[in-house]
Image (cartoon, rainbow, N blue to C red; front, side, top):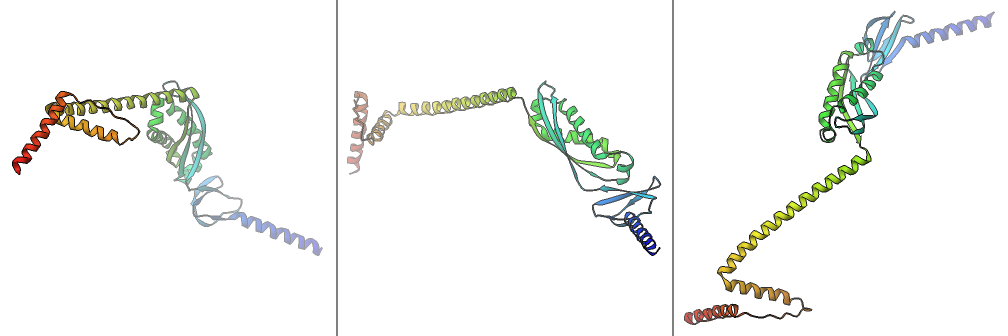
Length: 262
């Protein structure tokens, strides 16, 4: 009899502790608990210690921190009929725990599917060049569309980022050839501009030498000096009469000017 009574008391104690444990909730700083009493919304409580009525109240924990969704790769055909594989990341947070509980059953799953469909729709409306160059603009466009849908749920989409864009191998080779041709074009233009500038400078030098033959002869002698630095070369020159006469006249004029000064 006594053993039966002790067992009954122990059972009631354990039952009371279980009920008390289910009635007491500790809500963290970044969480909120949505309380439903007999299926009716009572309100949002937390953070801290929250006491629920056993068998009457039901508490649903909602995380208010930033949540990340990794959107799987999507095979999409762009506006210019190029098949690409695109994956993205969606960042969102819950602003209103009441609406996120009462208006959507599984908001995380719903946002994930919405992000996939929106990504496919937006990428299908842009061309490949815009997808590669205007990625930031496309990110904001996708974010705006998802945020407009999830705003009534009490969810704020903070950002959407396209992680990678994979192209077919044939398209990669074609783009590489295009880039190579573009760089070759620039190199030829730069080379032609250099030749044009060099030709202009040489033409100016020719006009100067034409008016001053002695300067041309001095330049020739300077060239001989530069060549003579290479000791393994033998230089044979032939002076023409006009150049020799011009050099001789220049030397004679210099000597005559020196004699007058003396």
